[in-house]
Image 1 (cartoon, rainbow, N blue to C red):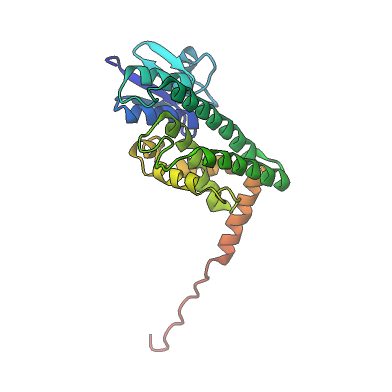
Image 2: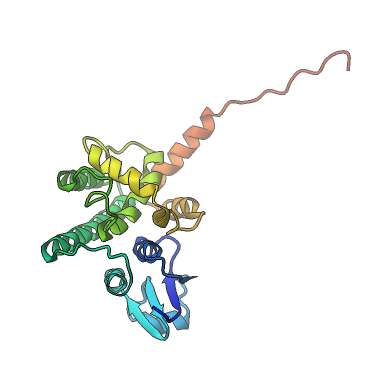
Length: 242
């Protein structure tokens, strides 16, 4: 890849994180250009027919949709992140699509209007994690010791739960020890860490609070409860000799 590479990005988009992780794994130099998706600039609309991030600009050519971007990168840059065997490669692509389904379910979770629906979506997410648990081997990654495209897909998924877990225990990790170990291994991967800005947790909290959802209200209640529990420091009495 001799042409300059630009990744049109958004600070919270998990699909952007996929592409950024793959670029980092393949040591492809690239410029990250963040886009305000609520006020899309003309240059972005010219290269993104769907008006969505990510878009990969390779020289003057544009590629959109994260799955297509990742597949392109695996064709043109080493190391390969897909298995060599066609059947295994197809299975990995199936689990990548499973990851996209999980992302949509996560969106339904944090947008749920009621506590009952919130808990129901949490249970659905846990059920999906149980399916993943059954597919995992000894790790540390999805396919064993080698980092693969499936890992690049699931790393942004697990990142949401750093915030969710701080809000409450929704039972996501019950009886899924392999998934927990996989999540922990991905967090430590340099390419995964570099896929987001340092202020990502604060950006995500702000985004979640703005939803006006059951989770948003729960965040406010949890925050208020934590503030009430903070110790009150009484001023020390002044000595009579001062």
